[in-house]
Image (tube, rainbow, N blue to C red; front, top):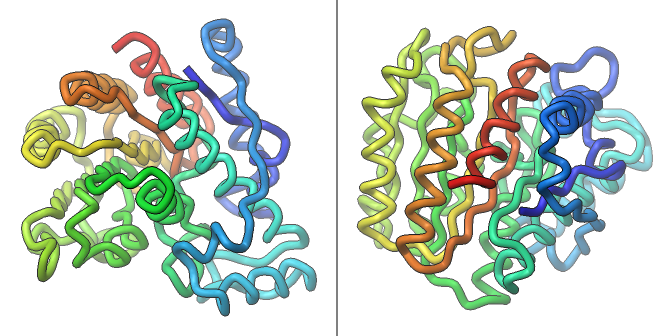
Length: 311
């Protein structure tokens, strides 16, 4: 079991009281060590993603914009949710590099499962930042797995409270990405997308599953919908499973309205591991995503990790 949570990934956090602050990884690691899980895992190292890797998903023009605002140390990368800060380019590159390293470890057999807590930046589009997400490491990894490993069916599963719009719209017409996303109904929460009718276009029609949950949805709501995700994935037999396990879907998050507990996150990770094993490859990579209540993210991510270790 591989965990990548080093000093470089910890630098991906916004200053001045921003919800996505630089203390999120520390909260995870404290719980990780208290539970003794660090003794059962291998610690990996991030690295900066190269420009060539970033442009597998992002436009060169956008990559250059991030670089320039990072040097300036000020400005906004989107309408205001994602401020630039000095070194933000390097920090975002480390997140992408960590996700790529974890993915490659699974593909080469150096790890069976992996977790990268500060990752899963699912809102960033090919040509812009959004919702605290500078570079979309999920999208970069999907493109890298296809180019480097020749995969043709990659599953992206998202249980963050927010719809993974940056991934969905980038691959909406792509039949090689099997998409499943449980999230708070977009009528009540950013980014306002992910209606159940959004099920893919053209060659990918029917390959995307969006399951909006009402505000206040709890573990019982999750349990009622989750089997649809497993059935959807099982019918398309993905060769790699990517789980964005944002903990802002847990009750008590300061900016969302769901009421799950970490038990739902543990179940999701365990079921995906069992599916991956039935499919014969075992590859499950969990990315931390959102979560702004520090106690919730510590419990939720470690519950995911526990399932990755034991399922």
